[in-house]
Image (cartoon, rainbow, N blue to C red; front, side, top):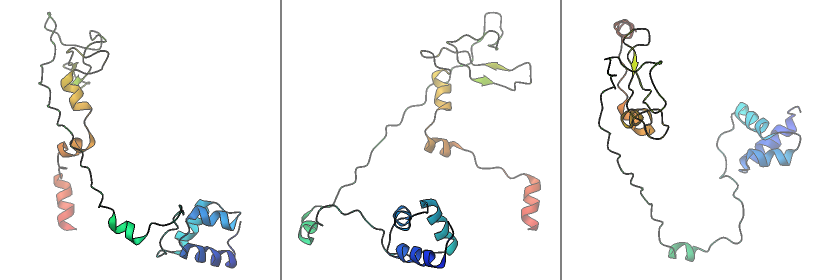
Length: 168
């Protein structure tokens, strides 16, 4: 489908009337909603009338609008879950720590250390019913987004980046 001058004018007219892209596509025929959106952006059409609203029965009278009390916003207060107590990683009777070879299904699989070193091990504490981590490490792993953002450390600027920023 080619955008002829007539179709572009019709698109501009319908857009100015406040019709949605889907409504315009239906009225014009032979064009998709996405094609309408793309053409609107390419034409740079911005300001438009208030969007078309579906009509439902009769509009409420001004008297009824004034008589209705303002809607109250409900603020949901979420309880703060206390952070579980840290428990040191499990150490076997032999003095060894949990490795891939010694860890079992009901043990915490939180990795500790660098996997490339011999000191690498897992937490090994007990987990709850088939979970991967103990209570402490599960608390670290599964944070709500707002807490994760709050805990994130500020980005460090390396000396080379400071030089580039200073010289512009």
